[in-house]
Amino acid sequence: MKTNTEILENHQAKITVTVDDKTFEDAKRQSARQLSKKYKIAGFRPGKAPYAVVVKHLGEGAVLEQAINHLVDDIYPKAIEESEISPYGPGSLEDMPTMEPPTFNFIVPMAPEVDLSDYKSLRIDFEQKEVTEDDINKVLDNLRDSQAKIDNVERPVEEGDMVYILLSGERKGEDDPEKKTLLEERRFPVIIEKEDGDNESEYPFPGFSRKLLGKSVGDKKTIQHTFSDDYEFEDLRGVTGVYKVKIEEVKGRSLPELTDEFAKSVGEYETVEELKEEVLQTLTEQNKNDSQDEYDTKIVDELVKNSSFKYPPQMLDDEIDDFIHDLEHQLSHQGITIDIYLQSRSIEMEELREEVKENAESRMKRGLILMEVANEENVTIPTEEINERIQQTLNEVAQYYSDEEAKRLGTGENLNSLRSRIATDEIISRTFKLLRDISMGKVKETEDEAEETSEVEAAQAKPNEVEEEVLETDEEPDVAKSPKDTQEAEEEKVETESTQDE
Image 1 (cartoon, rainbow, N blue to C red):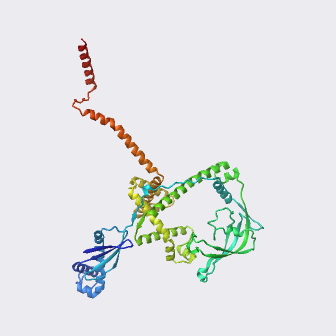
Image 2 (cartoon, rainbow, N blue to C red):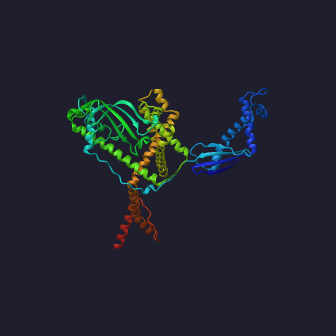
């Protein structure tokens, strides 16, 4: 068997394998025996029909196909070993350019490679978000909103009202009936947001609710809105929507006063001050986590920008598959299937895959960066810690599953999957912690302190070196004595001195 490896531009390897005629003939005859066991051939026991009879009875094509499959299973692992490449995943047989001699072309995706930038010199300022009085008041207002009293009113729409409307929408300038409709007419409630409120998540577009101010029951209005070129939904970017609105009901909302009684009604608080203190602590912790997440994002984005990547197309396809799977999971919580989601947006699955490709690729590169740093720094987790985390997780899920289901989650492939996920999550968490310390300059400080300690230790070692130099003389070195020996020596010294005095 001879192999030749060619590295392709898309980070795949083309491995050409040539086998000798004898090996191919042996494979054909072995395949004929296997086929004669599977198919009954008159006059012969299973597996005993001669090669020529099998070919005549089943056809040469069937024997060749079986022989090729057998050879592929046999030579592919050997070809990978001889090529000395690291595969990302299983390869595929591209073609057989010739049968004389039998030649196989395999296309093999190669493991990703990351040329990591100098992450150890990375420095980024960390900014901690502070909790403001406005932040606390927004939370308190939301709590008051949750207990608002709603009553029908006979007046024009005002800020804070809940308005029930009939709404429909179309794309301006679109003639295709399937693409023209943005929203089929339906009834839904709208809360009129404050002018300085966060209206970015408003439906059908940011700032929509305030377009209804001053309208009364029975009024109709046509509203036109052009979505920005960087709008979160790609299929709406740059689109001008024409929305028709009819006011059906206007309900006024009166909020409860911020009193101690209100504080007691929303939790175990005796006073408004206790409630505010709890809100402050919660927001402080939330801001800490948000600031850390934003900081981590900056770090990885900087490393991605300054690093280079090589990966096969199959890896990106797999990441897109995971992205779509995550979307399906999110939609399932809303009772929506992926098919309904595609229909609602009038797009096909391939269009959705193309739409999420950029984000999937970004997520993939971020993961590659983190794992590369983890490898560089040899970030590992003790087996005992993983086992503890697994047991903790199983104990938590056991509360929501039957004994049989919980047992199934803790065995076989489910257990292996859980172990892998926990290990990966923990490695990523520790790698983020390391990168955070590096970017804040903490690791450098630790290294400097270590150098200073080494210098101090070296200085402390010098007296010992002097003592050793003193010992390296022609004088007879002292021999360590026991306390008794020392006492006898002192007594002898005293007697000698007394004799000299006399």
